[in-house]
Image 1: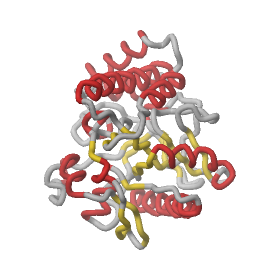
Image 2: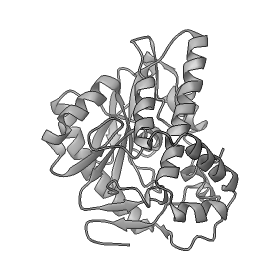
Image 3: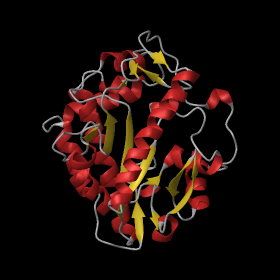
Image 4: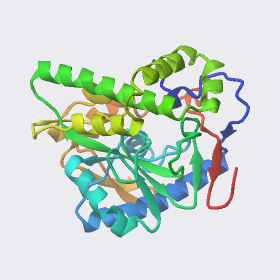
Length: 301
């Protein structure tokens, strides 16, 4: 199935209200995200919370010792206990500068994972065009959960988790239906995927997207075992299934001019995600960065 953001580079669409980030925008995005990271890192160190680089941020740390030059976001993973601790202390420590959205959180959720947004900024994506939630520049934080070791239980739980994840976001697409997203997808090779999302969203709209996000988040939790998963990550439940020692203990590496935690055995993690992860992709295969609005503190695009 088409993964929207990952396939921006190959989509052809007639949507004319999209803004494509420039190299200058991406440089400013990196600076903004680093400032946010510094604030989060300081609070996490204070409370002994571990933020571990995930996805493209982890790849950037390993391959570039910082951001992937053309990347426009920051993805972090966090052990479930630390994830819950951050939710509890967020308002006290960071609420003056940031907004948190997370499944089951009092502020609501616009996704099946935690999103921390900087106040006074705007990053409006197509999916969130009609959403009532804040749309600031954000960092995604994904919980790391224990996972079953029995293979049959793992398969059953993984399939159910992936279905709940698909349902929850499909209901969000339907509940806050974006005309810009519809135009973009219907005029590209994403037409079938869009129709599937909207049909699924219609069928399961007897509950709100926010409730479905909370159901998914509760379902993916498990008792302590010797394996973990990142069910809300890009590889979903079974694709992100690892022995504990792949992730723990995390280690500090250089990231830009500061430090960032990455997984303990980065070669296993990176190879699973990207194959030959040290190879630089051709320019034509890199993601495009499209949005409806971008605002670096009153500097609107």
